[in-house]
Amino acid sequence: MNSRIITELSEISDAYDALFCDLWGCYHNGIEPYKAAVEACIAFRRKGGHVILLTNAPRPSQYVQEFLDRIGAPRESYDAITSSGGACQAAIEAGEFGQGIHYIGPARDVQMLTDIGLEPSPVADADAVLITGFCDDRYQHPDDYAPEIAEWKRRGLPLLCANPDIIVDRGDERLWCAGAVADLYQHAGGKVVYFGKPHAPIYERCFTMLKEIAGAPVPHERILVAGDGIATDVAGGRVAGLDTLFVTGGLAATDLGPDPENPDPAKLARFLSEHGESPRYTIRRLR
Image (tube, rainbow, N blue to C red):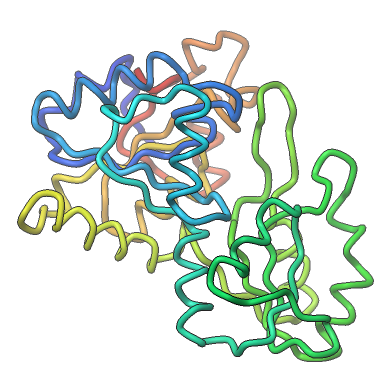
């Protein structure tokens, strides 16, 4: 499958009025922003474009912004943030899944419930299970949740997955995400409700937000999606009917050749074919 390899966003930026930009592996590495990516977003905005940071972070957008502030990401590099956690929290707050929500994830993200006046429910009293991530993503494996999965399945509980990602890179560490447990539950026959990329609702939220920012609807052909997740960013952009820019230096970096700045075209073509995706453009790092 063909994908045009570019070296800088400026090669194609005149064709677009908006950029939906992934965070982990594209804009930052979980520890610090990528300087070149930040500069690319700032340059895109200076020429009149709009940047929405579109993330599968399992927490509301205001907490994502606080995190970006802490790691030194300048606010001038983006217009707004849309997160899978925010979409999930909104659905829970609307009462779509009952009031008894059993929580799975690190303690820092229980605010997904407490911020809207809910306390985590024991699984025996739950209407649904919310998973934001692993309780300890450095030491746990998805299979460690087999007993919980069996219990959720026995009770017929829907699993609300606030982060569809399977893995993420934090610095030099590769960590499991909530999507890995959700995938196991789905294969066990359980019902999973996904929030975030690559699922359509998160893009609808972005379109609404972009319309408010731009003052009018932006045609889909003038919107570009950038990210390193072939199954989330690229697949999601395709489903939403948008052009995609595949950032190969993130999750797929080791699959595409030894030179971090020049993906091997043959390996890239094979990788895309194996995943059934054909991003319009490919870039090693967003710059």
